[in-house]
Length: 342
Length: 290
Image (tube, rainbow over all chains, first blue to last red; front, side, top):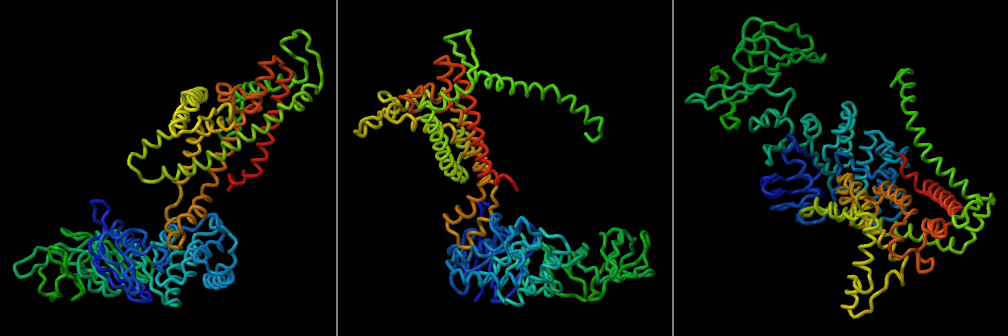
């Protein structure tokens, strides 16, 4: 229980088509992340799955049942919102109990469920506080608690970590992943942060302008992106793109190479360049290298990088790690490095 | 404004206006207090003897005082009830996305801009008049005998008129409060299985509590001193049926020329207003904190 099927789902706001026909099968117990730039329709699709937005055309199936026109409460889904959407005048206890009370669960049963949920989420000491008296992370946990307590068939997360500071975000990321392993419930997670997507997801769906560009496991997307958009969106720092002239035998318009697939040499290499800003992260170093006539390259080097600003160096790509894109940005089948004339 | 020099200067420059405001308030209050202990009647000038609490005794034991006291409570309570109930309903309606919403909002606010005497006259002559009024025409059209509003239900008629004036105020304050409600909370309540009634009761109403408090406090202060509507419609009658304390003080001092008695009534009104204010702040003022 917890499989969700989207069949040719679309959404229009007036004349603007926000979601173009989308097909997606989400398996039971899967952690799927919708990722994409802001305004790409990922949150809208999540709200459509939740039932908070009407579907213009197409079908949404939950557990094999058509739920396109089912009201939100009857879909058996729970959602965690970006602003947490806690009820500010209710205590933590009443916030978590609210969905149960609406579902007319008996008092004793409610007490039991609250006790077990608050224990899992370390909230037992805060039961009688109001949301306004809690920190960001605790509010986040209450919101998750309110979702868990209903034992939904799937959880929907709408950018739940974007209001937290960086260190807390890393912690909550782990907690949510941990929670997914314990509950083994389907989770749909919307974010614009590709790091969250890569670290948490079983599968990632990359959205762009109302369509899904690619669905796959994090490493699939990282190693074999279907087009330039996915290649550029997944991975941090971003992939380097080099424009090339297509020839009669080779349709390649653009080459893509990840920062870690570039080697640096002081004597010889494919691209001569000048070292720009250097970012030392301790374990690794990112160099921004200006290549004459080409773009600025981001190169990943080890932590003990000897170069300084203004050094002249040579860059070369690791063999077979270069991606080729045609004029439309579609990835071309892998070609041998020696065929590439630069 | 940090150095002691600038602070002294600030106090110095504030001084004249503070003194002026204080005098503006204190001089009339002290004079009223002083007059309230005198036998000061404009019909028998010259002999303003000190008579102690006799004015208060007369005012407080006058049957008219009790009648007008309860009328004041009914008037304030009735108008609060109608404006809050109607205001919440109107605010929810005005919050819906309808065509020409901005114009509707301005139109709804219009009664608040009409001065009290004018709106009372409009109601008296155009709507509630038993012969020519719209309500009378409507009643005869239905085959009923028209109600003579100001003779049969004088206090209720005044409550209706005053409510009409204050409804836009309440609706507007409550509307701004509704608009500040986080829509994600309503979405969350949707997913939690709350129906329209539950959503209103558990989410919208608690969110409105602060605005409701503000409306009650502000309206009470103004409604305690309703005067113009009574003067132009019923003149407090028939009998004392539509006399409130403010109007009673007016009859005492300006129709019976009893300045001493009127002043005593004025001091009583000040005390009552303060009791109400303290009572209200204790009861609902905590909503305004945190």
